[in-house]
Length: 155
Image 1 (cartoon, helix red, strand yellow):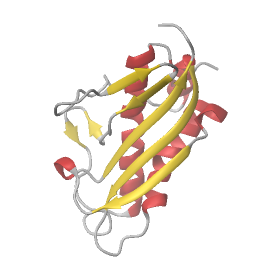
Image 2: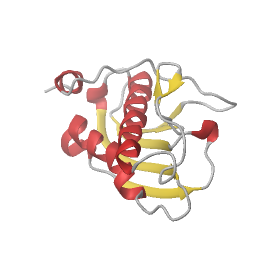
Image 3: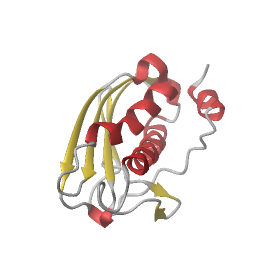
Image 4: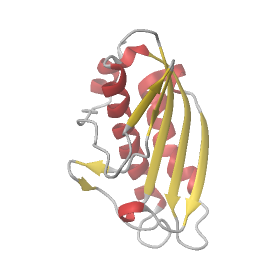
């Protein structure tokens, strides 16, 4: 099954790749590797979630925010390679969780992104991951996700 068909089966419509919000590139390709900048839980032109996990948001809301970050990252990958079937492997997810003091559910929050990548890409969605908690986040976003993906040759 194609990745586009899998997305449709999962009820996911990819948004346009979100533009960078500062002086950086939304994605870069070098050789067989595409790396996205940190993706936030944008839904349209607004953040769907804001605040700190463990204070303003529940772990379940963080999970959903991480899923949105992953959807935006997939949109970046599509912009980078045009055909998502060219993705050979999701290599690494690097996630930051905007966490209140004492919050320890970073891995469970970022499972939202990891679970989505495996659902969309199957075995090619298996990846390494970093899950870090931070005190402050740009735009008061609850989660930020960067994705590294290996891709086939070709433009």
